[in-house]
Length: 370
Image (cartoon, rainbow, N blue to C red; front, top):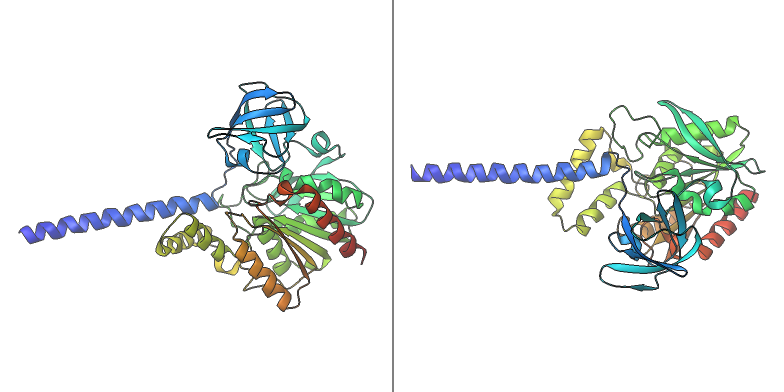
């Protein structure tokens, strides 16, 4: 009887352990595929002559480089860190308005407002017809008939890729900064989940079709983070892919399996849990995530590509995109690789705006004019 009791107790413990592990993996999978457009806040502790002191609740507040500060009713561009302590950081105010002490603020790599307010670029709000309904986009006009289609990353916003818009404008390239399924203001996917490129590429196809109908002869695709994977899937599957004259990929999630493995390593998760998270994501989205791998399954159309990567990226391993570049160039894909020391995920521009803008300018001047 005593042995039977021990066996029952052991069975109960095993069930609880397995249930707990599965619950954690279900939660982790949801973090990747459930839309979440929330933000985190810091607080202004003091405003000095030409600088601001903030709490350091967010990691972005402490990062080196150029970042935007935004709050209800205002925004400002901040320079590199001047001083920092255990719970605060001081940064110079380069331009924009001045917050008041006690204001809740957001520190981020993306500009805080629309192209006109932040960059002085005229734009219009347009609606792109997609298979799920109308999706809003920003259109910045220019003279040429080669358009830039800007594709942001997972749970991102169209403003995320706007810091480089003045370079496109100087080159005479119109810009269409799109939203896609499950974005704020855009139609939801039928299951309400992110498919991480498996279906979102269809909305890029809709944007290219829209551009063609408005007079675009060719397009440049600019994708950041998961936007890079979405661009890759468009090049793999869309009959409109041949309209692409060049692509620019900033810290792309080149291989979803490798991104998942890297995330598991970052959090110290056992490989079996990483595998289970991957399986749950596939089951919930009915998407073969193993096929979302541009290293193993490169696209059918391979336009000249600028690949940009920060070496301090905690979401997309620098080794992954170095490997992507090596594999691509060996296969004959014309690709230029630029690495930014100390740059976090999709924050290479923030770490060195002048270098980033020159890279983009020089690459596009050659690619578009050929």
